[in-house]
Length: 66
Image (cartoon, rainbow, N blue to C red; front, side):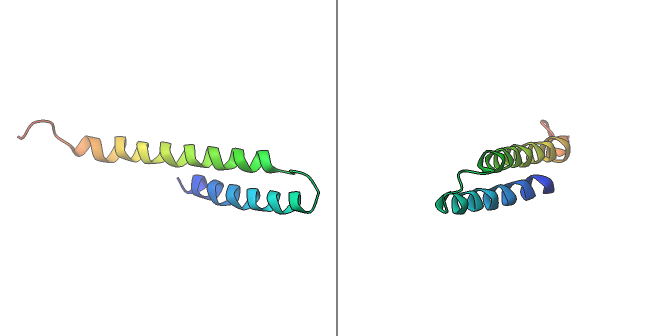
């Protein structure tokens, strides 16, 4: 889950840097990689949270009182 958070942070930083370069007239360099990192980071975090729920929370939930 931590690599997903890093991917989100660096994806946002990369998009901001790409915008600065674009304002300087250098074109959208690295923007697609930054967006890909952001999207994959979000997917990784969501899958990590789902994995924690499935492995930790669901086995402790009992459908019937014993």
